[in-house]
Length: 249
Image 1 (cartoon, one colour):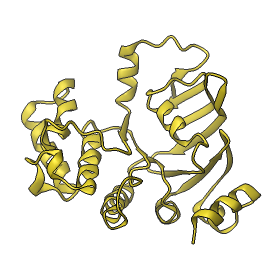
Image 2 (image 1 turned 90 degrees about the vertical axis):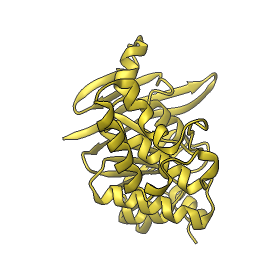
Image 3 (image 1 turned 180 degrees about the horizontal axis):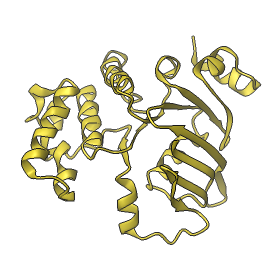
Image 4 (image 1 turned 135 degrees about the vertical axis):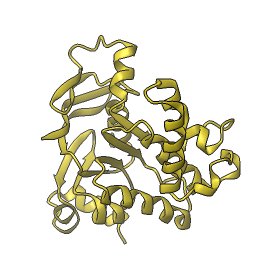
């Protein structure tokens, strides 16, 4: 059963059409890597999936239930809030609250939702920070953490609401190569735990080694889709061959 299905997603900003009819689905426990050139529509697609933008057309279904229909976009803020509970998002720039400690950042959303008792929320927050290798940093403020540590806090925060799907938007693009390794290690561990993940990434090694499925977006459309072996070892389109030639040494 598909846990996430996108049909016919379109999105324009003014006269510029960024998404031109995107279709894909992923199964529970799969890792989907989204690759492609800058400006191709990757981040816009992820923002539409997470309701940070609203697609102009198409549908978004989770567990075979349509939770957004671009032909009927009159969705309330409460409906959006409920729909977002299915999704955890890790941003490119961490987006941690500077006035809160690492543990407070991780536990803030669960506290506001009041879904669980506070002592359970705190224990889960500590456990999540331990799982990303930051048990000794839970009382640190973001300004005292490295970029890689901040991103790992952001991953723990995204997991705190127990989402069905974990989404990443270029999670290592602002990190030094040495620090990138520690973030990718955490992401690989999540994949090994059969977490359903959608990862917009420029890390071709991660896409090749960890993803179950890779889609190549160019010009607002999915130009190619397949297994990592199909995408990286047997690309069909000249555009994908050109793109891989520019990013893979």
